Length: 408
Image (tube, rainbow, N blue to C red; front, side, top):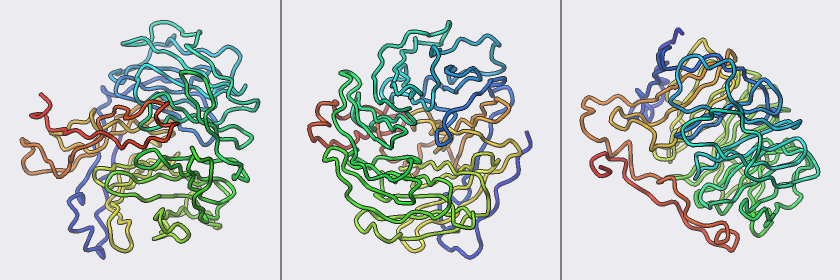
């Protein structure tokens, strides 16, 4: 796999030249560290084709209704008779791991059911055909499933009728629903920094903020005007901003940044390029860096979000001749901090490869922990029960140090 060198920062930007991330670069895994031979199927168009946590990665299998789950430590060619999660006569439209339980996978299905699957420790050694539980979430097909970032056992489903419902997956109860504000299908959604508010992108070209427990819209803004769906990310951590990427009327890719407190007008809107592929945005909240990977593209652009106009600054670009059909980011606790690795992706290619990509900031001396790159970060544990969150609690994430000396 040939890889082009990252482009230098634009010469006109003094802020970018001074940025400590200006030499941020990506290192793809060696061929011996990649996964080969996955027979990847499909999900609904707005869903990602790969999900991952520190223990497992999951992709839809070529056989409809089947999901392949492999340890993230897997390397080389997969066995042709790979054990699968098997839905009997049901199509999977989306899937997601529980953020607090590596061994629990949720699937959103064509028949309107939200199905939860318990994955055995270590690896899947035989087909899993019996789910741990099933919630009849809708009489229409389910398109998406997402988990609350800080409250345990809270999941959200989106159906083809544009209904967004929030569930306690332990009891199977639908404890809240968003109002009927969406005029067309949703593209995606994201949570704010304490899990109290929700941003949605919709094909009606409106970006909305919701208080899901009060079941009301709290703000709206015009989103991108292109026919294809937009996507948003609530930038958390050091920031409290909403990022959106999509298309113009002339099919140029574009991005914008919104302040939730003054939501009507974007802080900045910037054109990216002319391309038909949809963008998959990712965010490093500890370093305020946005990564944009286009489906079908081989490149990944990255930008720093700063506090002065125009607020989003281009840093560089990773290029590869292997296009990505899906991307998954790994939690901070899974990264090699002594190599100054601030982000790691698992890149799924159309040929069925999974290639780990490490994004590292070069430092002259990496024998010492670089606390400016690794401030205290979320510990990955829930801060509320489902009952507490549905009851009105807003507990921010617990922070820990990634310094190996403090964790040993």
